[in-house]
Image: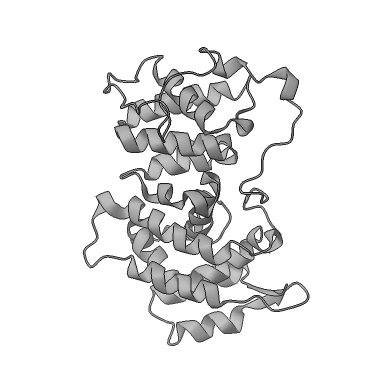
Length: 290
């Protein structure tokens, strides 16, 4: 597949020209600097074009900080749907994410990261270098971490959770375990933990990775594990978590493994390959350096 990319140098040039109002024809400037990689048929860009229109409609007339992350989650669903069948070699290329950021999603990215853009701190949100910071890769990964389109509603199930997604899912191993990601998102959606509480819960979860293969947990086991970790005590005296009756979904907090979830799957499976997100390669943002 042949697909468009932008170099980081062109990314920096285009951003500067646009932000300084020196780009008379932004679309033409992007087209002139883009070039194509790969072999065979041209990438079908129509799904991405449609997604861009849907994402633009998500931008509200009034910008409310409390709604930003939830809006990003809804936009992420549109983006993921457009790229669901795109080969991994394209998704792992930072140049592709740069091109898409300028070709179709510049308005949304500039709106989403308005504060940093106004301060001149914009490159990390458009250059594709970090898949947990650059807006488009992190949006795609949000849905991928949940296990794909079948669970896309969870991408916008929480509010005021920018740090929750970036620090406690996308930057850590939890993003490679879809059932665990879903369980953590459901728990946060039900309980809206305070910042200190969710950080403490995330720390316990990180420690659990050292002696358990959490990638192979199913939804029931993952829900029970999160409940068990929370039962160790909230970080700053937060509320008791809501529970769901057993047999319903989300599953209840009862531990089907007798309180031994974190030690049940250790050495016997430690050599298993890490489960890939939605049968895809993990999008790590370390594609060709151009």
